[in-house]
Length: 115
Image (tube, rainbow, N blue to C red; front, side):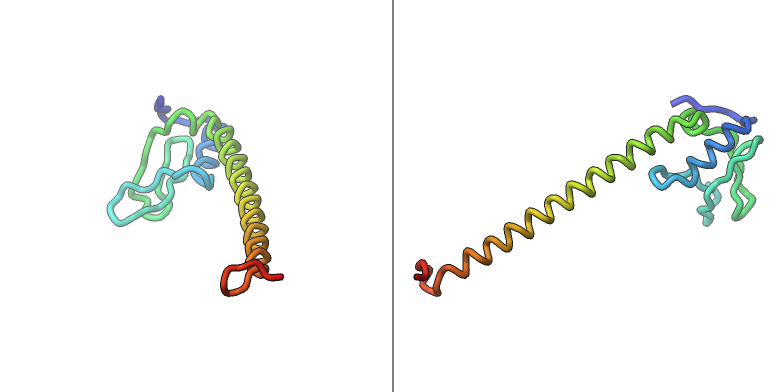
């Protein structure tokens, strides 16, 4: 990964701040002890809005050029696929459980087929 140093352009600031609030990426946070504020990008760099005691003048290139959005979209697609797969598994499990219960009903306590 390549680092991009400030000053950042308007488009880079927008992309960096989008990255910082994305649900699929861990944001840069304040490095000051006791503070975990999420950094906010400005043209001059990233600052901590909570303590105003942390300032960072670089980001990774994919944060500034918007490449993270493509990866974010892939993450969302993967999550949807996983959710759909889970639904299929749950449905198959439920159907199997119902079949097993019906199967058990056909046997008496001596495990012989009921007439």
